[in-house]
Every structure is written in C-alpha cells, then in structure tokens.
Length: 354
Ligand SMILES: Nc1ncnc2c1ncn2[C@@H]1O[C@H](COP(=O)(O)O)[C@@H](O)[C@H]1OP(=O)(O)O
Ligand SMILES: [Mg+2]
Ligand SMILES: [Mg+2]
Ligand SMILES: [Mg+2]
Image (tube, rainbow, N blue to C red; front, side, top):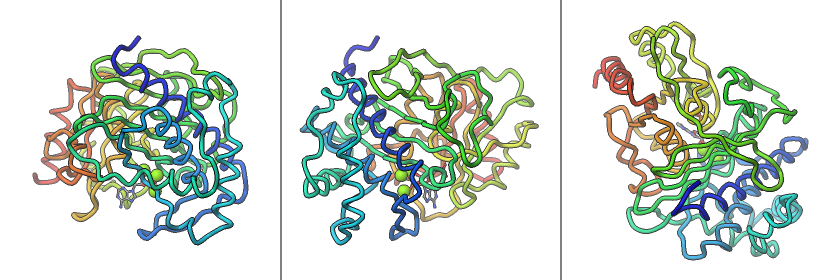
C-alpha cells in the first residue's frame, strides 16, 4: 500500500498501539500518579510510560533519528515511587502478537534506562534531517476525565511531516459514527472503541481498529465535501483556555453554520474531521504568548491534508514544523475541506480583524 515510508508507518502504528495498551490500563487504575508540571498542566504515569515505550521502539528501529517529545525525566529522578510505578507498567506492556512485539525491539532495560529513554525526546527539532514528534497522551485532561485523548506520533523530514499516526482509544471504530459519539466524560474502553488514524505524504490517510496485537486492516478515509454550510459541524477544544470559543461561535455564525460546536479533547478532532465525522476544526489563540507545540499538531495536520483537507493558521500560512519544538511562526489552526478552506479562513480573519 505504501512505498517509501512503509517501515516507518508500520513501526509507528505498532508503537502507538502498544502505548495505548499502557494508557488504557492506567485509565482503569485508580492511582494515575498525576503530577503537576511547571506550566500547571497535568502529567500521569500514563504519559511517561507511553513515551518510554514509543521512544524505545524508535531507538531500536531508527537509532539515528532525532526525537522531539513532550515529557522528560527530571521529575522521576527525585521520585523513586513514581519511577517504580512507571517502570512496572513499561516492563509489563507488550503487544499480544509475538512477531509484532519483536519488531519493536528489546524495550527498556531497567529504571536507569527508563530515564535515558525518556530524555531522548529533547531534540530541538528544526529544518534538517529526520525528527520524530511524540505526544504520548495528547489531551491529558481529557484522558483524566474519561473524554477523548490521543497518542500522537509524527515523522518530519527537513521540517515537513511525512508520516502521521494518531491512536484514539476512546473514539468509535466506525468511521460513520456521528461526531458527538464518544465525547464528554467517563468513556470506557468498551467494544467498538479505539481507532488508529495514519497518513503518509502523497499516499493518503487510513483508519483501522486499535487492537492489541498485529495491525488490523485499514480503510482509506476522506473528508466530506460540504455542500451546505448550514449543515456543517465544527469542533473545538473542551478547554476554554486552549481556544477562544466565543470568537469561534461568531465565526460559525458568519459562515451560516447552525449546529452548535462539538467540544472534544486532543487531536481526536483532526482524526474525526479527516474521516468525515465532522467538517471543520478551529483553534483560535487565547493569548499572544502561548506557542503551540509541534507534537500537538504534526500527525493531525498530515492526516487531514492527506484526507483532502487544508490546514493553515489564522494568517493562512501552512503550519511550520521546522521552526523548532513549537510552531513559533504560526498563530492558531484552521482545518477544513480544501474546497471551503478559503471561505472559512476569510470568516476567521473578518471576526479576528486580521
Ligand atoms: N494554554 C494552552 N493553549 C493551547 N493549548 C494548550 C495550552 N496548554 C496546554 N495545551 C495543549 O493543548 C492540547 C490539548 O488540546 P485540546 O485543548 O484541543 O484538547 C494538549 O496538547 C495540551 O497539552 P497536553 O498534551 O499536555 O494535554
Ligand atoms: Mg501535557
Ligand atoms: Mg498535547
Ligand atoms: Mg501530552
């Protein structure tokens, strides 16, 4: 199905699938080992564990590639209890399919190696060479409340996204399921939930069930054409601090959208519009100082574009993943089907006064 990035795609999907086994287990456990980071955002043993598993798979398969990952080990160096909990999870989490697990390599050796592995994600990124971006749990707040979250992995080459994988354990497998199935709180990993979206540049985007063994068969996904804006649905963050929801409502009204927005955590929004469950994703800056992180957008950006969408910031510029660890040259995100993107952008710019 794919040519030049076939191996990267396979390893990335298996690594995400294995990480999801760990995060689902943490979700079921009472003690999630939640600690607060410097910016007051939460991180759990699920975030650390998933990052360690993904990096160990990349270290084995692509030892020369750089990695930009959200988490780092400093909090664990001082905290033996937390470190021990994470090590236990990492050691025990394996894909059920022995051949698939074998492809991911030997894994993390011991607690000291766990810290080293986590700290391999400190690359500065940039415009040169191969750089993986990892968000081990995107939407940690969603994860904690039982809403949507995603495990996000992207491969950049010279600053461009070439491969994107999003594991969404709480989204319905069914690409036809309505956008508002699986949002809100206390989603459980009952039957019929858990999907992996993936894309390779120039080759399209796929969805497949998020399993626990070898990869299941994928289906091509496409965005829906919007024939009538009145029936379009748009999604945005649950968190009012992450995106300006009152401006988004004005933009929707200007476009003639009549349905209320669907609020969903994480890059599950990108996956949902890519498969046509929703139409438009708006993320409008709430502050002049917050810079979006590349791991929060790389996979989603490619999946939407390969499904027939266009993704820009509010200035109409493509997201610039070569700028470093953050999207320093961008402001906000507008993702929509290519045929209506310019119309949506114009409404955004009118409302924001750009
Ligand atoms: N002030 C902020 N503005 C925008 N996004 C933020 C802010 N603080 C954290 N984030 C990140 O926004 C993403 C969640 O997106 P959404 O709001 O669409 O669910 C997360 O990646 C979260 O990080 P994290 O990965 O730590 O959860
Ligand atoms: Mg975080
Ligand atoms: Mg994130
Ligand atoms: Mg995260």
